[in-house]
Length: 100
Image 1 (cartoon, helix red, strand yellow):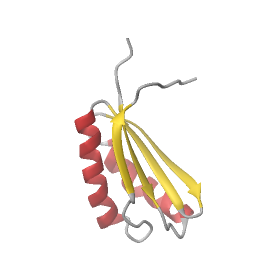
Image 2 (spheres, rainbow, N blue to C red; image 1 turned 180 degrees about the horizontal axis):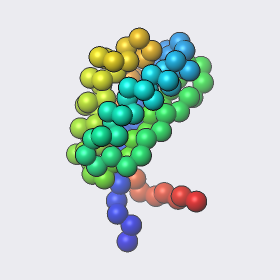
Image 3 (cartoon, one colour; image 1 turned 30 degrees about the horizontal axis):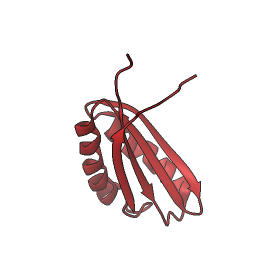
Image 4 (cartoon, one colour; image 1 turned 120 degrees about the vertical axis):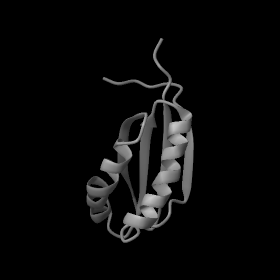
């Protein structure tokens, strides 16, 4: 049986420069989030019209929730020049996945 994983999803709106945001995410946020306990994977998605979404995969739900708490602080401290506070933050179990 495959080990259960947990995801956090954060949505940001009003991003004025998606390329600058992606660069800053790569330089600042990815090293921070990927060093957290239980980290598995991270995605930064340009949804268009100034909306960006991040998806992070962790081994346990408490690790995923802790990452959301830290993410909020990191965005305020390090990324406020390119991102506003996330308008939606959610965490939960991954119930089905497929990887090729």
